[in-house]
Length: 142
Image (tube, rainbow, N blue to C red):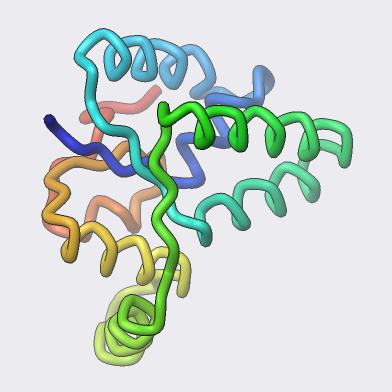
């Protein structure tokens, strides 16, 4: 089964109806569900999303999305990958050695997970993700 990694920028657009990419995010999720792909996030993406929702919306919204994500993880609809010591050290190496990239540390953990899990696609509205050398959906953003 195809695996697709979801980035914070995509999840923020999906859960936030006020985001300019919300409708596109809804359509992409429908396509993923219809195509029965394995949807993957990391604990760092989970953290970054909840923190971003808290900062840009409100605590109620952050808690609501937190509960929705936990439900999806428990039901098996979303696979949650944890950044263990090996991934952490690889991400640290990526962060230090790619001096020309302005990737956040969370981006580096995502890159390490994607490479180690042989994931070939990700969904993101973040331009940094496009530099990973994998297929990033959507190919065009609004």
